[in-house]
Image (spheres, rainbow, N blue to C red):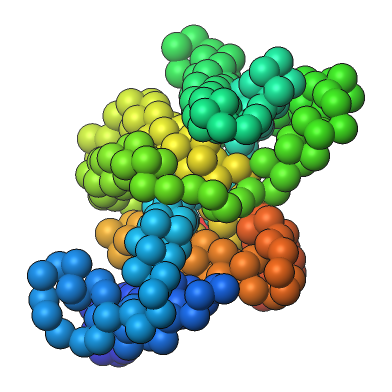
Length: 357
């Protein structure tokens, strides 16, 4: 194989470095963009000074430091975590189901989270002014997280037959449970007031608006630990790609690995959507694209999916804050606009290979 072949270490390292550089550029540009404009060098200087490295200029605008550290950096960091969680979750699920068309929503996490959020919005009125707004937002996030975990657990246990699950049963059960939860969401949307209905729709399209460091400190340990534990499964996922029978013959406890992967996908996705709402296509398209670039080995596919997910959300959030003038569009609008056509082109390009690896 050529030194720069798809699976070569040199090429993979180059891909990772390019992605990290692109991510850093987007983060710096995003942090400096807004009503209070902060030049890139001042953004970098502010970060370095917060790390006690006295290099570079501080923001010249009197509100620059506050805008960076109280408004923009929290939502940017949360966006990176959300993208990393969705990218890792999609990669895990595609690996454990041996299907590059799988995505975290197939096990009901997103729809279950939406049910939890809708219930809180309808029953409590969602957010109100003052301290009630904070309680309402945290109530929505908590209900979304719990709802996503419960739904994922229901999909897994309902798919069991004689103590074990199968890929086809997981997929079909997920479709059935998702349809049921969509019915609940439709009912809650119908009985909601006009203000609550707008909040439900906006939550389901995804947004990082108004998020602060408190959300980051809750989401960060869940997503970081989830990604770390996912890395432990990479070798077993590679063996699963050979087929369940072959993997079992090589010492892989297939059902145990599937159960572990589903738990991790549920935690990663629930933690992501709890604070950001439902953001479509990231968990589906990012791992699929990275598989075409770096190959199917999960030791490189999973890390690049994590970086790729963070990159997509960071770019989508920047676009959401800038393309609509004074207003802000939901992130899900951009991921759907871009993810849908891109995924269709990927399917057309690889149609000769079917939906397998």
